[in-house]
Length: 146
Length: 424
Ligand SMILES: Cc1cc2nc3c(=O)[nH]c(=O)nc-3n(C[C@H](O)[C@H](O)[C@H](O)COP(=O)(O)O)c2cc1C
Ligand code: SF4
Image: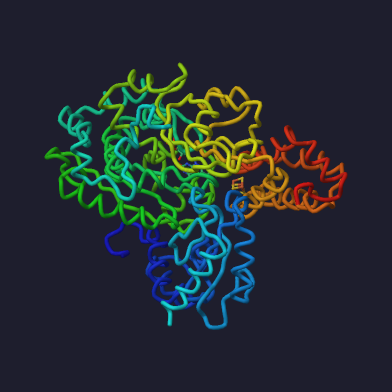
């Protein structure tokens, strides 16, 4: 990926994404490896890694659920939906379920306001959601993982 | 309905798929590029774009023709064209809908812009939530390359222009031009105050033109049909072209509608969006994304164009219309918007980094019934400081707050006097 580009660090996000797709998150080892490839110091890459919403510096679940909490989803009942999801999974925002299946993280407006309230599961959008359709979604994700 | 008005960008929109390269060509796609390449002279492209008064569709409304001309003829190479498909302004989703409809219109528009400044490298900067659009673009760029429409020796000429897709890691500030340049270079995406301007020293200190998706997509049509045709599309004399309005919130049919600039707000809400949901009353809207101000029923019939909104102290922004009804608490809505700006501040300068959390706390206390009357002047003072920040993020973010104070002071006072949210 970095071969053939004049400035390796311009590939930083792509390299990090590739490692993250493979290992689920960006571990310290991955960070050091990526920094070497990108001809950056680990600290320079850490500056980027901690800046971006979709780079995870801690282990996450198999399904990373980003719940939109911006104004349109909020107005369309997003708060209740998130409360229901967290209660059902038995975790707080930012946590991962004990079985390692689900992590729930807040996210700013995801650009699907015409489908509010909406969430992303591993970057794929779902919406407009009701409590019932959210329950069905969680069930089907569990089944897929089994 | 929007179909009652001339459709330009979304004329051939399909419900569930893109217009293919073959279909796009059948509809006259890539003829603008072919004629310009055959002619070989970039000057007429620059001239027609300047005459058309195409204003940037990414939020700031800067004239695209003027920006093109700031790339000096003798500027160094390589030159870059960046397409801003970050679209992280809350309420905005027009570029997503467009990219899922007409990717080749963007590719052609970008290539025309590139030819006019003799750029060789193109980059589409896209947010991570739009992964499906990123994949569509990569695939369609490949097909266009096979057809000789981008890449080396475009249409057999000696002109070459390559386009790649750059996926962002996801932060609102990356939509701002100078932050986006830093992001593209693998640096921390803080804004950087000009000069130098991007068109002078942008990516790797080389001339770089950055435009929004929708701005670039207008270019093939202007080249084909001329500046006067483009101006005549708008309903108001000062405006030019159509606009992709994305409407969300308390309307029956949220979505993206292509309408002439200058169309009335009431027409958009009633005719296109089927009116207010559940028979509720229109209370206010943000006319152009989270960085604009609340507009009340007083302006329900306003002409939606850049000038008319400026005249009432507001902005057309991205054309993202977020509609609030009379059941919605405006303090709570503003609190939510302020939370967004507090979270997304890049942290570079103190007033913004510290100011938004402070405002969020004050608004939060008012909303939760712990407000006091002297908080209102405090909020005003902090807002004034937020106009003095390093980039345009913070002045945008105070838009909702200052307009809340201007139009809904009664509602704020009601929270304070009753010691609770009257809508809860
Ligand atoms: C905080 C901030 C975020 C922005 N986000 C975007 C964005 O997501 N997309 C966009 O096209 N312009 C965005 N802009 C505006 C750009 O800075 C710039 O004006 C625009 O991309 C230029 O293209 P245009 O002239 O074609 O509109 C943003 C500006 C600011 C201050
Ligand atoms: S105004 Fe905010 S976003 Fe802009 S540079 Fe300052 S801290 Fe960063």
